[in-house]
Length: 392
Image (cartoon, rainbow, N blue to C red; front, side, top):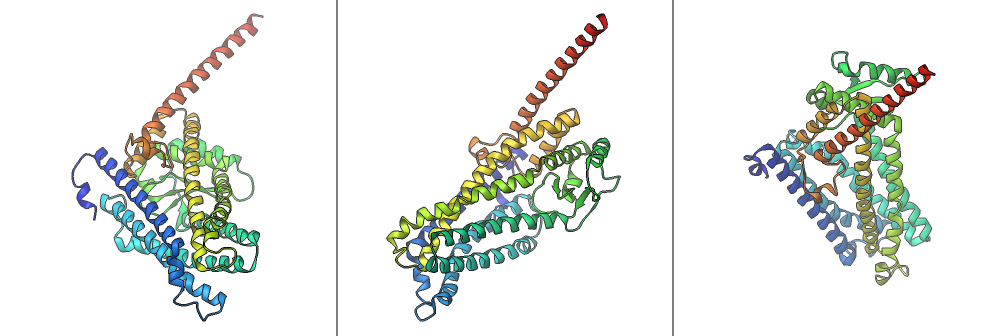
C-alpha cells in the first residue's frame, strides 16, 4: 500500500517520510479509538446489547452482549495496527512476509479480545452486586495482570531459541568487561551472554533477562564489534541498576490511575446514563475510556522517563569504554535500521521513547568532554599533592 512512497529519495528523506506517516497513523489510530469509545458510550453498546439480553439472566446476558461492543473496539484498533504493519513492510523495516507478520500478532489479538470480554463481564457483575471499591479493585488487578503478562511474554520470547554466544561472536572489546562482570556475580547460577534467533521488525539493543544478557540475531549480524560492545555494556549497566524491574513498577503505579479516571467518568457521564440506580452494558465503555486515557498518560510518562535515562546510560557506557565513539557507532546503526531521522521534528521527539540520534550524540560528546576535563583536573591535583608530600 505504501511502497510507492519509498521508491525514490535519499535515505534521510525516506526516514523522515516514514516517521511522518507512522506518526500520522498513530494519531489517526488514537482518534479512531477515542471516537469508537465515545460512540459506544453514547448508546451503541446498549443498542448491541438489546438483541440478546431481554430474556436472559443478568450474568448470562452480560457475558453474551459485551462481546459485540468488544468486537467494535477491537476492529477499530486492528485496522490501524494493520496499516502501521503494512507501512513497516512497504519501507523495508519489516522484511517478513505479510502472512508471517499476521501469524506473529494474531494470537495476541485473540487473547486480548477474550481478556477484555471476560474482564468486562466481571466488571459488570461487581458493579451490579458490589460497591465502588470492589469494581475498582477488579479494574486495577486486571490491568496489572495484563501488564505483567506482557512483561513475562517478552522475557519468554527472549529466552526462547537462545544459545550462548561463541568466543568468535563476542567482540574483543568485551573480554575484560565480561571477566569483571563474571567475577562480581553472586550465587551458583551465573549470567551468560546469549544470542536469540528473533529477526522481527527493527533493530534493538541487547537486553538483560534474569541474569543473562540477550543479543538478537539481527543485532549480532548488523552491529559493528565496537557498537555491539557498547550495546552489551549498556545492558550490563541496566542490569546493575535493575532498570527493567524499576520501569515495570513505575508503569504499574501509573496505570493504577485508570481506576480514579474511570470513577470520575462513571460518576459524571454515567450518572446521566442511569448509574448507579441501575447497571447496563453501556456503562462499560466509560470504564474502557478511563483505562484508555490512563494508558495514554502512562505512555507519555514512560517515554519521558526513558529519554532521560538514555542520556545517563549513554554517559555511563562511555565512561566504562573510555570513549564515546563505540556508542556513537551503535546509535547511528540503530537509527539507520529503525528508520529514525538524524534530526526529527520536535513534535515527533515528544512522543518518542528514545532521544533523537543527534540529541544523543550531542549530549554524549558534551558529557564525555566534561568527564575528561574533570578526570584531567583530578589527575593534576593528585600529581601536585604527591609533589607536595615528596617535598615535605
